[in-house]
Length: 459
Ligand code: NAP
Image 1: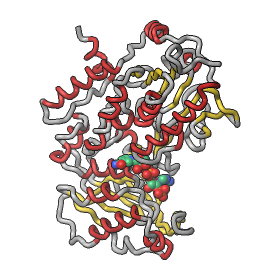
Image 2: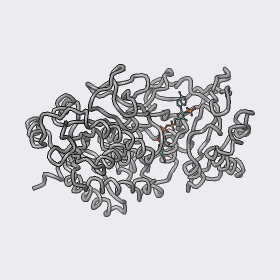
Image 3: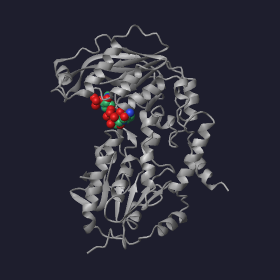
Image 4: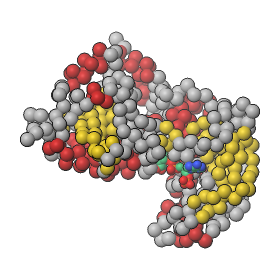
């Protein structure tokens, strides 16, 4: 009988990714009865995934969830290994020599494509790029956004589209005391964008944004929301969807949209146009975005399953910038099964599968398990379910050969990898907060990995 999970032989678990789903998995394991040691890996020297690099800078309350993760990180049996890229600095097969189980928590790092002509023209960007840029993510800090155009279009009506469009619509005074990266604040200060268009392929009842996010658009200091005449007229199935007593999501959204429709003519310097029932068909321009061709849609299907169908009626919207915010996608990890169609690691209840076979000792949580849906809190029960599957499997797990982190440290050092502990991250954190104080911001992030490492290695 295996001794795994006893004080003599604590179970060794590696978690690949340090976003919310990784932390909730770590918490569930550490709190469990068996003795478990968790090592959490991240390719950046900084933890917290999308809480740091995705949540909008003007939503500080959402970011305060990191206090929960700090507590988990402070629990005995937990260690953070930042600045280690699994699959490059250490191969999956190598990692498997040091851990009895591996949990993949790598999220959804790229975007869905629209697959329309002109998508790659200059001035057409993904939401991921823009979000990473204004949040100071090292991968995106050098991206350039030409904000000299007056008209910007955001395609999609999820909460990421709301974040992107709201940042474009806000004044510098509304942003300067947030933790937005300085390079983004400087560029946005010069922005000429005055008209922002938010494009939804379905109707107002089906819009994915949530009420607090759409309500914020009515509270912007120098931007008015604008709806097209008749935008809230509903087809019978949408009306039935709205009338469903359980559909609080749409009822709350429609109440806010109705309040926008009831406003007088816009008076502020910027306008935020909300379009429904339109699909992008082509981005036009010589070498740079000049316009977006939209096809008007109608809705077909049963309530709650309504699909947008093109009517053939086209319109062309002149614009200089397009942001595509039509959902994220997971990225394959070398050596790990991947479902190309869904952009997830195939799994049964969190156990990774290759074909129809469960891969012993491999698990998955979060967006790379179920796709990019839900809010941060959605990950807690999802990660707990995977942790429960892992705990059930302990008697079947094969103990790994190398049960000491020192050997892994030696391996990484021999490859020149400067791995970062949680205590190291806390020094980076302190330095960022200190830099922020000088500017009246909660923090000024380091946006280059070398800058972060320099803080640690200052003599
Ligand atoms: P999302 O909520 O799934 O929204 C994707 C949007 O893209 C939908 O409006 C969708 O329309 C549209 N879309 C997809 N394919 C399209 C196409 N080919 N043409 C036109 N439109 C298309 O995804 P997300 O905005 O990326 O957000 C991901 C998750 O993070 C969500 O669960 C979101 O709530 C969460 N999040 C939350 C917050 C917050 O709480 N403040 C902030 C950011 C993100 P259909 O509805 O017709 O499919």
